[in-house]
Amino acid sequence: MNDEMGIYVHIPFCKSKCYYCDFYSLKEQNEEVIERYIESVIKELLSYLEILSCSKITTVYFGGGTPSSIDSKYIKQIMDIISLFTYNNLLEATIEVNPADVSENLIKDYIDIGFNRVSIGMQSTNNAVLKSIGRRHSFEDIIKACNTVEKAGINNVSLDVITGLPGDNVETFSKTINDIFTLGDAIKHVSVYSLEVHDNTKLGFLVKEGMYVLPNEDEEREMDKLAKNMLEKEEFNRYEISNYSKKGYESKHNSRYWNQEKYIGIGTAASSYINGKRYKNIDDIEKYIKYINSEKSVVMESEELDKLDIIKEYIILKLRLLDGISKEEYYNKFKEKIYDKYKHEIDKLVELGLLIEDSINIKLTEKGRDLANIVWQEFI
Ligand SMILES: C[S@@+](CC[C@H](N)C(=O)[O-])C[C@H]1O[C@@H](n2cnc3c(N)ncnc32)[C@H](O)[C@@H]1O
Ligand code: SF4
Image (cartoon, rainbow, N blue to C red; front, side, top):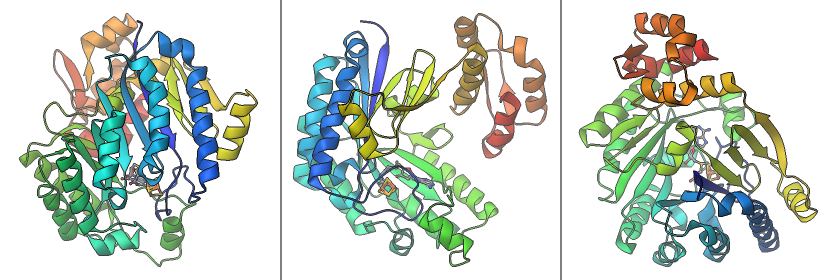
């Protein structure tokens, strides 16, 4: 067995398109397309036979799109193949669900298939806000989903929340965070994302036309601070810029990304990082299926990182984590001290109060987290 590995599987189907979303996903729910897609995903997985057979697969993540929007039999078909390679190494298997799709049977199926973690796309608990962004679920669906998942026996649930949504304000947002604490003991993880407005989305159009007004920057910053204070009071500790968890429930799969560790992304629009190379698959389902079936590469972009690229990326990814950069780990990995290349930048950022360092680590300060882009600029 060689290195540890994570597998991400992209399920590009959603029953409706949320106004803010620019992830690659299709509203289409045509069984024939789904079947052909799943067959192709399995073929792509098997094309990694050599790497899979000599890796220790510790994490699996099914994301999207909305994996819960398709029949669980398809998820099982893919997971059955992955299971041929996991032996007893799998520590964490996550599946993303929409609260409106959750039922007792679905979660029982997921447990039988091998999932031990569920990530729920909650976004807000305010029904007016949910409606304004085109979500197809209500707060009542969220309550039911959390109860059902916990009762079925999964005790490791993550919730996604977004700050700065249209119609939201500091008061309504604080209710969203408070509501999290009423959703049961299975909630161990919360991701708090800041709304990104993409021009090519319905939200982008509505904002550009002045039909939607978003909370301003100060309000959004206040929401972020509120989330931090309220979550940390309830022992959800911030371990990454956008992620909070109870002790021991940090996302093992997503931590691979921030620790610059290997993962294979399977499916249309999926990304991979293998042996210092980054790959991105084609984001077009029909082309993806066609290429797989004609044994053509589905990689749309690839980049071989040189040592300097790897160092820069490592610094930026590691600084996202609460613990920041371990000077010793950096030295062991790159056979040089971080100061050899970045003394000037580190001194400057420490002086600006954006970084803090001690004899062991270099990390972002609270101010550094708010102004992270300024920090990244120094290392790009
Ligand atoms: C890839 S989505 C998949 C989750 C699932 N499809 C769902 O929406 O329920 C993961 C999370 O990214 C966040 N997200 C998606 N688009 C975003 C945007 N434009 N700005 C901020 N967060 C976003 C949402 O919180 C979402 O739950
Ligand atoms: S359900 Fe998730 S992936 Fe699908 S459109 Fe909404 S945010 Fe995007």
